[in-house]
Amino acid sequence: MSQVRTVAVVVGSLRKDSVSRKVAKALAAQTPNLKFRFVEIGDLPHYDQDIETDAPPAAWTRFRNEVAGADAVLFVTPEYNRSVPGVLKNAIDVGSRPYGASAWDGKPGAVISVSPGAIGGFGANHHLRQALVFLNVPLLSQEAYIGNAFALFDEAGELINESTAEFLKSFGAAFTGWIEKILADAPATRAAA
Image (cartoon, rainbow, N blue to C red; front, side, top):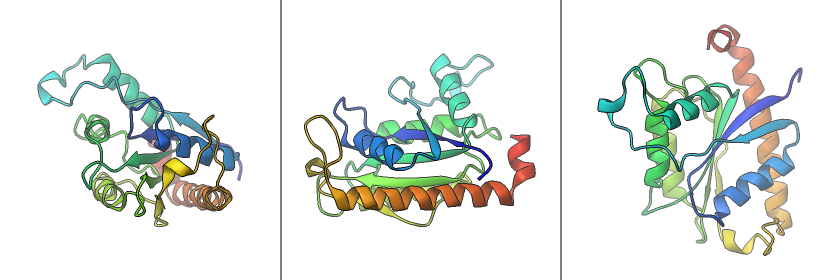
């Protein structure tokens, strides 16, 4: 690999002690060959086309620029009512506009869903994938469901489960390879972005 790739990390949970954020940080620790930058979504006004003017909300512009400036994107999300949290769906909508200038277009991506339950956010993972495919985000086909997530970290937020650490290391390696493949296959598209 010729350069360190930057990954915009979008966490679907705003909670201060978010286990989704802990998983994202643990993945970053297991994948030192990528540079992970967390892109915050909690300050994004709800998407409303009426305020999509020549001077959109500053938070929208910041978010779009941070996503656009990354080589790839990683989504780590909890599951709310068998789907993604509303704040994450709003971020996806904000990033996809204005029409024809989506920050997501062509960016290699990956999805990890996180849950305190046993099935690891299966519904959220698949709903998110559906939206991202529509937005032309080439997704790593390896699916990642992190179940029983509250038991995986100590009180300091450090990952203490060895099998999860190994899984994240493997996932990070697969994601790195995916990013390189997608960017190598579409150099002209990426250079124009």
